[in-house]
Image (cartoon, rainbow, N blue to C red; front, side):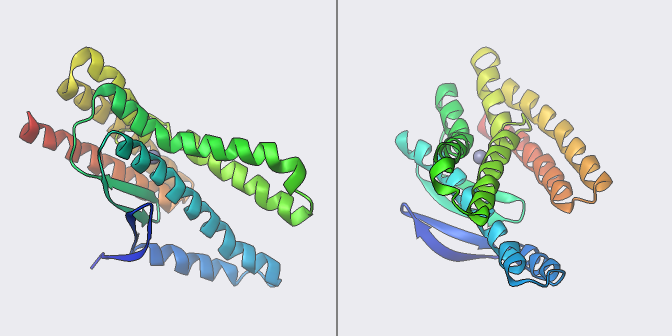
Length: 221
Ligand SMILES: [Zn+2]
């Protein structure tokens, strides 16, 4: 029922769009009906497109860092709540996991920095200034949000890598997953309070993904 469609290939990695993404597009199209001028309607479609291009670049950051260590990426899939780069099964050292996990947010901070540096020469019209400011805010937001230590989000993976140097892989995973599930509750409750269903779905995703990582421990160790 929930299949993914291949929409392209970038740096030798297949890019997929998950079918639940259509819900987001439908929601965006519906909310566009509220706007009557063509520019607002165009921005209503263009801004999510910009955001998801940024998400793809973020995932590419992870994929290319993993490739640096000889680990390929099976595919990158875009979900309404963000992207997932599925790496080939590999065991990274703690240092490698830190670099691979930090590479995604690092791409965002680099893009935000570039937008800030280029703003004086690129923001020549109010629209260009608006788009550039959105680009900067999206990158900064995505970079910072992914650093929340909610395993298996990037920040949580960095936390696990940090802990595993001291406590070993299994115990570090258990601790990081415990934090991940606490944050999952926070996301879920915040999402319900603010009627932000993406946040609720993210909470459910993080909770399940943290549980899956813990259950894999039994098989690996
Ligand atoms: Zn990431």
